[in-house]
Length: 418
Image (cartoon, rainbow, N blue to C red; front, side):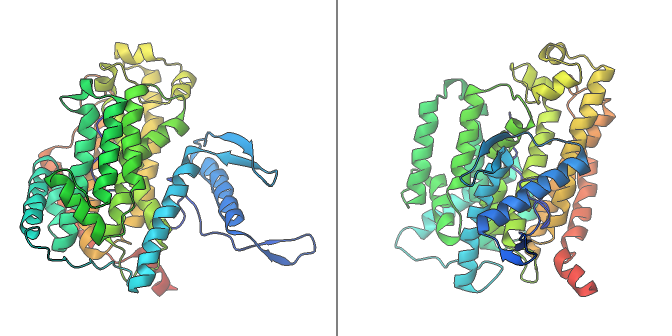
């Protein structure tokens, strides 16, 4: 399954792990009517369970989870979304620490430290990353030209590492890749985070992570997504598929938020911006999956929730046969509706980014969402017809993306109206 290598951003403060989490409740009523301060865990739990119910009522899509008793004796929902949200909180906390230390919402870049003989090599490394990004992600690369030099170099370095990681399981040597090879790739990742890069392209990322508050966990999680592709070709339900989408696409947003930066005038929480990044990643990967059903089937893979296929009266055999029936159309309409839900959530968060970072994100969002329109235009035949956005439509999308990128953060606009 090709990885989504476009940067992602998504919902506002009402989003948690793709489905929405409101700002934590700070109190609850006791039996005598007085307000009692809750613990951080209880706040998070209440907000989470409230929004799960809210999501189910609003969209009709269930959040499938396993239930276990937590230490307090209450039943806890251990869904993939909650697990991912825990990662989001960790990444946001890291950025918040940097914000407090620098007292600036739009993260400044740490200056280069001139070590004899290294700066020219780093320049060459970043130049090579630029070339790779320009070749394989032309529209996104164009958008990065509006960023500051330091930020665009960092985004190029992240992009190249993600692409190299994806090619381990989808590239020309994929048939020779083993879990051991991925273990070695993860060890190499740890080395570059310690300042011991293996090659030139590693050196670019190694330099980047010293300048921005980037945590290693999303990178490790992406490698876990590659491991998943080696051992798994079916997904029982959307809860399983959601975790996979996070691994291979949502992680890109978590890697990139510290580089993209938050608009200084934004009043959105850091957590909500990370949730924004996550939701667009999920949306993009779901779109990849729906576009590539036929291609994946020819490789013996089905990246669709098995329980939802069964509910629609469909099976893997129908997919391998490539039959476009009314059952298939009905099933696809529901899957497209879910992907669009994530894109809708994503729109609310893009404007919270720093002004120079919004254009490539808006461009990726608008262009990827159009793929869903093309699937519909092909009468839901994603078995033998590949949905793609024409060059003309891409060119039309760019000025629209730019116009949206100059709109100030919505959270600020809303406050002004009040």
